[in-house]
Length: 106
Image 1 (tube, rainbow, N blue to C red):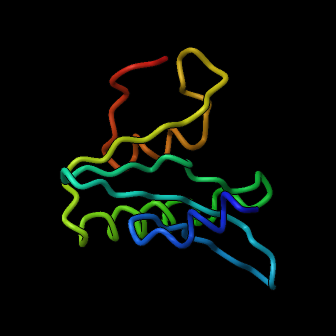
Image 2 (cartoon, helix red, strand yellow):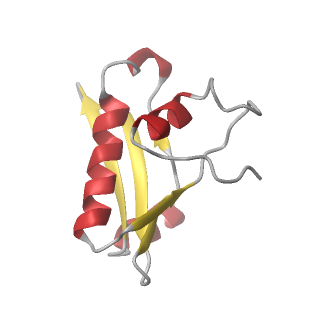
């Protein structure tokens, strides 16, 4: 919990949360850096039973919009995937829908 508390106190970081009936149904973390770059470093997480409702898109849009308003022009993201081709990972499909590109796989 101390990590989350420290993250939330940092003015250069945000966690965007979606709720339904007092239950968290999605989240997306974003951070900005001093050189006009930012990251969606914690991905977009929506439980399978809530996917397909636009929650992930809304969260990612909100995070990207906050980064843009903060002066960020280049955004990187990190997503843990279990497929070497990435095509079956919901978050990667969402990033591609928003114009993202897979540059490198580590």
